[in-house]
Every structure is written in C-alpha cells, then in structure tokens.
Length: 270
Figure 1 (cartoon, rainbow, N blue to C red):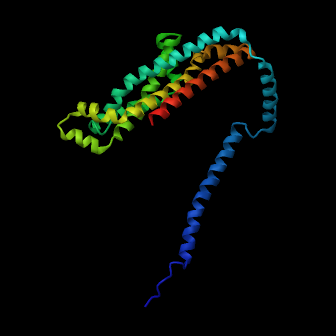
Figure 2 (figure 1 turned 30 degrees about the vertical axis):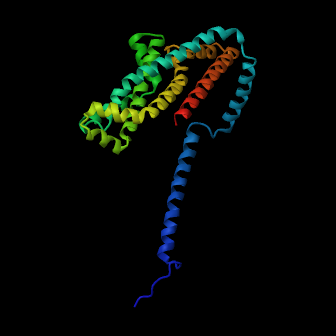
C-alpha cells in the first residue's frame, strides 16, 4: 500500500515546478532588460559625451529663460483663452457625437452586428492623435482655431465613445431586467436604466477629457491650428526664451487650476 505523503513533504517534481515558475519572470525580465539597453543605445541615450553636451546646453538654456518677460503677458493671455476655448468647444462637440455612438456600441442595448462596426470606428478615430486630426482639418478648413477645435472634437469622440460604451455595458443586470420587465424598449432602457446608472461616470470622464484637451490644445498652434502653441513655437524659433518661460508659466498655472477644479468635482461625484 503506498505511503500517504505529508502535506509538508516536498518532492523533486515540486521543486522543479517552483523553479519553473521563478524562471519565467526572470527570463521575461532579462529579455525586457536587453531590449531596453538596445533601445537606449539606438536612440543615443548611452552616449556619455552626447548626454554631457545636453546637460551643458540645458544649463545655458535655463539661464537664458530667467527672468520671464512680462511684456508678452497680454498676448499670451489672449492665446491661452483661445486654447481653453478650443479645448472646451472640442470636448463638448465630441461629447454630443460620442454619446449616441456609445449607445450604439453597447452590447447590452443593441445587437452585435451593430456594435461591431461602431466599435471599430471609435477605435480608428482614437488611434490618431488630436494634433494629426488638426493637421487634416488645417488642410480642409484652413489655418486657425476652427481646425484645432475639430481635431480635438474628433479625438474626443473616439476616446469618450469607448469609455461611455464600457460604462453602459457595466450597468447592473438586475436594473436592466427590471426595466425590461415592464415592457420598455431599447430607447426606454437607455433612458431609464443605462444613462442614469452611468451618469456620474459620464460627468467624471467628460471632465477628465476636458483636462486632457486643454493640454493637447496648447500645442495645436505648432501646426497652425490656433491657441498658445503658435506663440510657444514662435518664441523657440526666434530664441526669445524669456517670453517662452512666461508663456509656459501661464499655461502651467491654467492647467493646474483646471486640474484641481476638475478633481474636486470628480471627487464630489464619487
């Protein structure tokens, strides 16, 4: 009769299994480490002389930025207001388009043959950064904030659409069944179950999208799509580093205020 093994006894097979489990993360770490070293070398970040030159140039660059040039504050402030307008308008237009698309992409509301193409469309739209969409719209509608707003709006459609349909698909099944049980169709289901359940999440994600779009809109001027990016690029090209610092500080202050206000509202919704 075979002897019963104590739960505290270990066999050779047990030791080998433990070693195998330990070897997998070790192998993954070594592969990732090797890839990181190759990548750092290829992009030049392992070149000591180059890094030293960069540090020396950084010291000169930052010394040239001080003190900030307050004479550009009026024009920078106007450009910042335009940047916030681009972000706000783009976010709201994106929201208006994303909400119905998210409902069509929600598997809890519509059939698979409807959700699949809508999800693919949203995936494609959010794959392209807002600044690249802005370049497309600069070609279509010309230079200026209109192109930047449309670029921000289109990217927001892709991002918000994905977040919203995930919120909708996470609606409590018991609530869905209760609403279906009284004979409600898809529109009534969306109105009385899905949207109320997801309302806090919708507002929270909308605020986050606005925060992100303020930062994204600050570089729209690099491609002629309006906002403070036009001045940032101009100051760099003309070596006006003190003016550049003023523009950066104003932008940073605005972003921090918006982030704090948004965080406060989102915390209140939890």
